[in-house]
Length: 462
Image 1 (cartoon, rainbow, N blue to C red):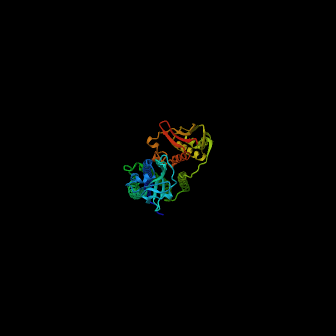
Image 2 (spheres, rainbow, N blue to C red):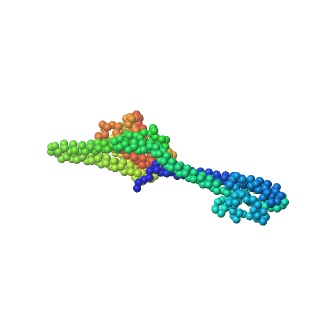
Image 3 (cartoon, rainbow, N blue to C red):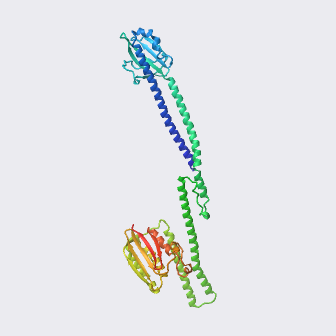
């Protein structure tokens, strides 16, 4: 299913916002105008009614209303929207102006008003449905007689004015809606151009061009974070591919060496008839190379499994000294043959996978025995802190150059390449140590000087 464009979604959002804003604003303005018009008309009606009552109260009798008709109807003269009616107590019409606006049947009962206010204004409708607003009151004349008066205003012109205003608001809102949709689409399309540029740059990144980076100089502030994150991801991918390529090359090189040794020795042996002892020596040599290949394959498989996020460790609590003594006992024969002493000084309680712990320490101890001169002492130590336990494997010997320290835990990395094929090392021991420490949430470090080389394994307290 085709997804809706983000530009169209944002343009529609702008249009909806514009519609809501203009609709709400227009509604407020319309009601404010209608209220002000009504208030002004009611005020005019109140003033007219007050003047009419003041003038009529000076007349001697109802007949005076007829005699002074011109004076009284001057209050509404010149405005066809206003009307006026005055009747005596018997309902006889004494004065009437613009009678077509009057529909007395709709009017509430006339009652005496001491003072006339805006809330006294009433509303009714004429026979043709027009709205009328007015004030009905009785007026006491000088002779004590009472006449009824109604002053009103026909609201047709006001309703027409408001209708035109509503039409203007509708048209304005519609035009604003169309303009907001079009301009919003163009603005969003232009605003998303940096994103399209980023996508275009990302499309140019291939396996052979992982060194390509996305330009962030012209990117908006909001997209700069995305560009930096993508560049960081590309840097990690480039490093990962470089390591994978190097790992593949080193693995092929290390596999080729024992295979070449076996093939070469076998070809030499088959070049002419050999004695049984020579064939037996060849088989022993081939078995040693096969064991080396097996160890390499096993180590590679372990690293591959350990890199899987679903790899599970079985961590338990155990004394560090007991396990270090067990590892030292295992290597005691090899150490005696090499003339090297093993010393264990350890305290503290560890929480780790026992098998993985033994493997990590064994790799470090095997490495230490390989490079410790005869007569030296390899020390296995552990000390506990509030944050965790640090296990140290220390051995005397030549110092490791500083430029190699950071890469010692890389796969297939060796300080002395000339000794790699004869030492029996697969180049994966320290890489396995680092992986085991990462599985435990800890880390492995190394220090080396003229006095000793020390490998530290830090197990955090979980």
